[in-house]
Length: 365
Image 1 (cartoon, rainbow, N blue to C red):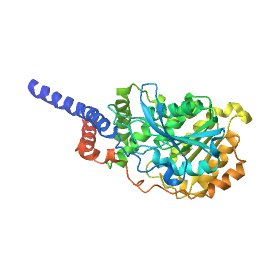
Image 2: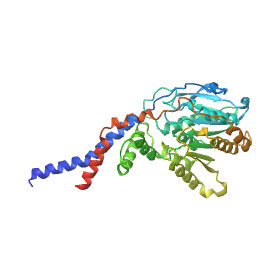
Image 3: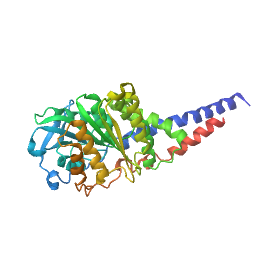
Image 4: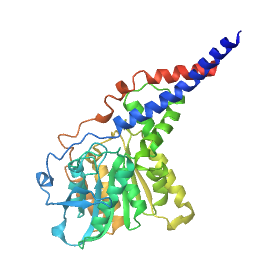
């Protein structure tokens, strides 16, 4: 073979070796642009539609935002414990109201807010991540703690909002309890799962390294690191009572995430023995990703857990009975999938097969 032939072959080999990495870098940036900006769903009704008394207010954040929120006072506004609700991705405060219904019946004040980039908030210029759910959830917690009619505060979050809830709890030791529903255990697994939700046919040996890179590219604009937005890392730091809930038919956040979270929490508390705050789990047989408040066992377990952790206002058994009797149903507009992922497979074009072919060719060279 001539020198020119060897040089050409070396150039081709180098191009084949670099191609998968170049595609992965492009894929990560396309993913961030498409998946990082949620489609907003402003409230279509307010707590009054469900017979709940409420006050509209704004929650200030350290970076100067004013998040729309509702304060739902219980028992005529007498001092008592409050629960801060954190909605999930592409959701809004109105979709937390079925939870507010049974919590209000059990005697809890409720604060529910729109996370930035969601609900009635304007669109964000930078990608929204669990870090923003955590900081906005924490702003809600601080606002509730500052009220003279609040004696203790718990958090309840769903999906990405559950990550935000445990991040807020880990950052504020005065959070007396955390209820986490359908919680993604860590950012890598969540990113990998979104590939599946977007119907991207990427095999695991390629998908996991791609998820590693994509997660880091996604977080870069706001300066987050992976551990700082991980529910698993946060639950290890939080010392208070935890109730983690998951449905067996969850196709958005796989059921296995529940075990990972619970194991992490229990391992972190192992040295405390009997002094450790409880880590409870609830498995909803047949439960999907959303709407678990429609199950009486969900409502009664949450109410009993909070009454125990917060010391009232009702006796735990009575709180469970009252909550189970509430007819909590999903809002009429709560049936949409993650819209930001709808055209991700189109946006990345033939990328997955390009990665796969490139990897095969490099392995065979």
